[in-house]
Length: 283
Image 1 (cartoon, rainbow, N blue to C red):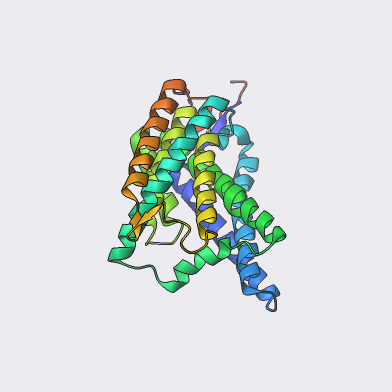
Image 2: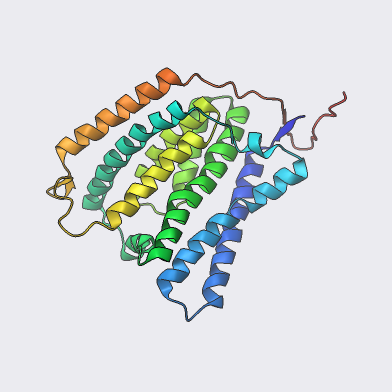
């Protein structure tokens, strides 16, 4: 059985359709429940938006009769590889947090973007389940399916250049967050997630890194004033913590590379052209 690799422009169009569908669904939720608490509606909108993002891709895959596990890189990885992702994620989170603080010194984030943090506010048991479920689990999983599973895999086949494929998918991932004040940090994290997805030919390690990064952000949001003195120093991340973050990142990467061989991702595929269709499996 052949899996169809669409053109890059086809992949981009499908992702744009997903964004439009997610936006329409989110607006519909907001209009339909005008009396519901604004924060609750924003959180529900986030969930609905994430769930609608991959629908056009799923519909295309169904029409093309593609194997979803292959198309989205839903392949198993070893427990040791998952464990190696933890120090990588923690190191990246610490270092990109400092990048964000430096960026804020140059150009501060407008209020409408800083309100994103309010969406991660836990106000009760149900809210906790919702925030952890959506921000830490659903959003990372859906985004990894789209960017490291679907889009980057297409770039790897089409461009035949792993470096460009990782960089372009990370750039698309950063742009699609629509927050220019965070674009550098998101891009850097995206590069690392793209690398581990390529090396393992699986989205699970990039998902772990993504989920930990989001989870730490949620945890920081709920820390009381003055409780992070061990972490901060004059408005920046403490030099000791920064060094620890760098050590964690380097150690995690070395461990990951040592225990994770590069997986051959050249499975049976058909590279779709402008007018092509998949070859007959009997021919």
